[in-house]
Length: 214
Image 1 (cartoon, rainbow, N blue to C red):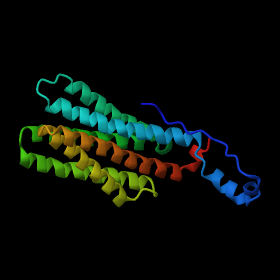
Image 2 (cartoon, one colour):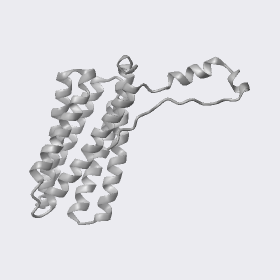
Image 3 (cartoon, rainbow, N blue to C red):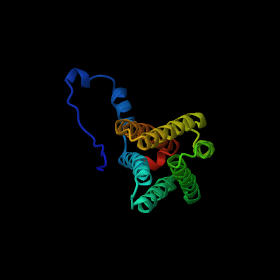
C-alpha cells in the first residue's frame, strides 16, 4: 500500500487579497501538517487497515475446508498487533507499547476462538467468548484513555464495539456463504477502522505536539 505523502503548495492570489489581514496567513500556517505528523498518522492508519484485512484473511482460512495457511495467517495477524504496539513506543515508551500489544493479541486470540466456536455451531460458547471479547475492548479503551487525556473512554468503546460488530458481520457472512454481505462487511470494516485509527493518532499528536514539528 502506498503511503500518502502531504506536500506543501503555493496559491496565487489577486493583489487585493494579498493586502488582507496577516493573521489569515498565520492561521493557515498553523494548520499545516508536518512531515513527521503525516508519516505517523499514515503509518498508524496503514497498520489498522492491515488489522482488518488480516483478520478477514484469517476468517477465510479458518472457515474454508482444506485451507492450509491458517497457521501462517494467524502468525502474520499477531505480528500486526506487535507492529501497532511498537508504533506508539516513540511517545509512550516500551512498557506501554508492549501492554497495547498484549491487549491486541488477546483481542485476536479471542476472535480466533469465536471463529472456531461459531464454525462448530456452539452458540453458548460463542456468547461466552463474546462477553470476554467486549471486556477486552473495554480494557483497550481504558488503557488508551488513561494514557491520553484527549481520548475519551466512552468514545473509544463505541469505536471498538463497532469494530467488533463489523468483524462479526464478516464472520457471519462467511459462514453463511453470503459473499455480497461479506464484501460489504469488509468494506465497512476498513472505512470504520480508518476513522478509529485517525481518532487515536490525532489524539497522540495533540498530546505530544513537540514530537511532530518537523
